[in-house]
Structures are given as structure tokens and as C-alpha cells.
Length: 272
Image 1 (cartoon, rainbow, N blue to C red):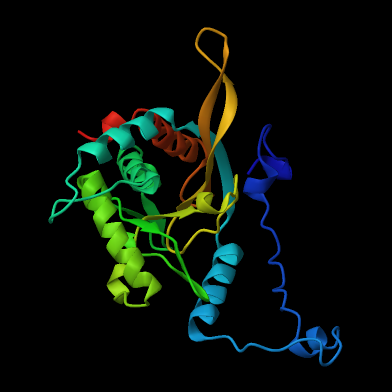
Image 2 (image 1 turned 30 degrees about the vertical axis):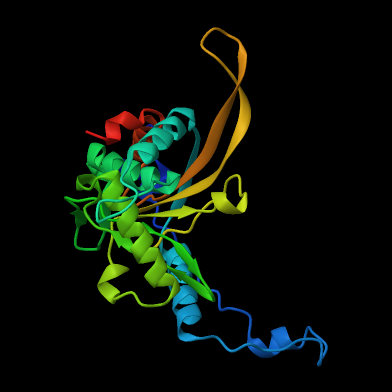
């Protein structure tokens, strides 16, 4: 500190002042909520264990993780052409059969992006930062009454066909509530894709202990300016990356999202 209590020029108040701890805000009591509604105009559906766990984890996430959000658009035309060609040439039966979805490319691109930006492939602990060697990508799967997030382990090492078949199996068993805990616990990031519902873009809540989650919107035709200055139609998908600011600073998050975009727009890089 400067002598005489004078702060040096350029010093940040945020870095030197210690803010008072804000008191915890209790949720609205049940009796006060029920008092707002006329008896006989509603029914009460008791929470099951899954819904209580989801509520607890999401409240923990938004209360303890400083979220910030980065959004960009991804052009899908080249990927859609590659997907069509790959599926046309893929085995239609037998153990090596597969049929790729756009979501399979998203998983692979996120896994490879984390390898290119290892600072984002991390988890916060009070003891220190966990830097993960592999990209274990969780994918949100909606089920009745909630969701599971099964994890594709070592996604950077798997082919698109392997990811596709594994994801189909995990999603099917998730909907039947037949996943083992090790199949949906852990992971280093998550993907939440609501494009099939026509959602254009949204901000997802980070799934602890992850430091990022990618929210994927619908691919839709939009006018863009071509390389010669002409207006042309392109298939565009908006993606938003939610980041834990304790782990991922703005520049690191932007680097990860741009690595993801480059892989999606040049999908041949995911085949080598």
C-alpha cells in the first residue's frame, strides 16, 4: 500500500477493497406462496428425488459459480454436405453401422476444441485448478420429469461413428432411467442442444463441477454476404458458451468457442 493511505495511480478498488459478505436470501416460504392462490384452483405434485437433485444442483450452480456468456454463429453448410456423404457411404448393418447427426459433430468439435484450448478443459477446486487430459463431454438428454447428462469419455480420441453409436445407446438408456452413475457423473464440459425444438439461442446453466456448457440453437437459413459481396442463403446455428469465470477468462472462452466454430465449419479436420 502507498504511504499515507494513498492508493497508487491506476490501482483497482475491486482488487484492494474487501466487500462485505451479502446475507443469504431465503426462498419464499411455502405458506406465503399458497396464500397467493385460491384454494381449489390448483393441485400439488410432490417433487420426486430427481427433481429435488436438479433443483439443488442448479441453485448451487447459479449461487456459487460466476457465469458469463459468449455467443457466435456457426455456418453449417459444409458440415451438412459432409454428413450426407459420410452417411451415404456408412455401413447400414452390422457392428460398424452408424448414421451421423449434427449433434455428433458438435460433441466431437467440442472435445477437440478443449484439446486445442487446454486452459478451458479445467475444473475449479479450492485446493487448485484441475487440468484435465481428456475431453469428457456430457450431453443433456431430456426425460420425463427431468434430465440426465450422460458423458462421452475421451471424445477427442473417438471417431464420429463411435460417438454416434455410443450417444444413441446412452440416450436410449437415459430415457429408460437405466444409466449407471459412472455414465453420467464427472465430465469436463456439457452440451445442451434445443435446436430440435426450434429454439434460436439460449443461455445454459453450468453443470457443476464443469467450467463450461455449450448451448446450441436451431440451424436455420439466413442471408449472408458471400466472398464476392453477393447475398446468399446459408444455414446458420447460434451457439452460446456459459463459462465459470473462476476458471475461464473471457479470452480463453472466446478462444474455445472460436476453435469449436472452425472445426464445425471445416469438418474434415474432425476426420483425421
